Amino acid sequence: MKKIVIVLLWTAISAYSQDKENQILHSLMDKWHVDVAQSNFQGYFDFMDEGSFFIGTDVNERWTKAQFMAFSKPFFDRKSTWDFKVIDRNLIVDRDYPIAWFDEVLDTWMGLCRGSGVLKKIDGEWKLEHYVLSLTVPNDFMDAVIEIMPSKDLQMDAYSPSTIGN
Image (tube, rainbow, N blue to C red; front, top):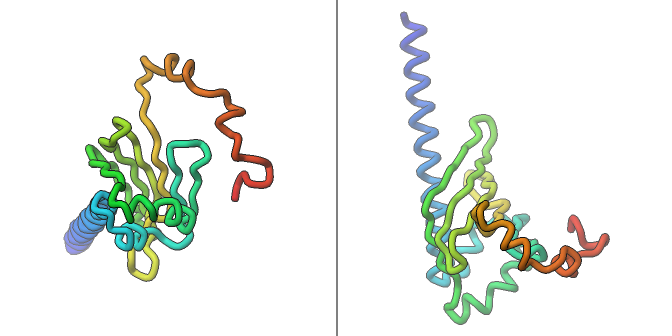
């Protein structure tokens, strides 16, 4: 009986701890989206780890943090940043390692988009390691989208064997 009580207590504590961590991560992600909407350059980029990547909707958009900062700075300076509203988010925190991954549906100026990424706890602080923004295309419209897309050669213009993977 004593073992059962200990197991139940441990389970309850673990569930509480996991829920609290989820709430923290949801709050951090929500703040990240608010920071960009309010043109808070420092807050937005402080959440991103130094080695992080931001993958945009264009095939050529694979930004290191430094590259994304340089690209984004004029938008922040003009207070003309983007305002993505989270509609839904799924978040999974690994129980054994200080990492979490997520996907979210966003209401954006482009319509519905999906964001996904990886978060990592570094020195007790959660940081965004990797973020991917992608357009959502309803399956019923895929043929029409494919028809208006430029050729693969045009899309991949900026890539060469020396830049892929960098």
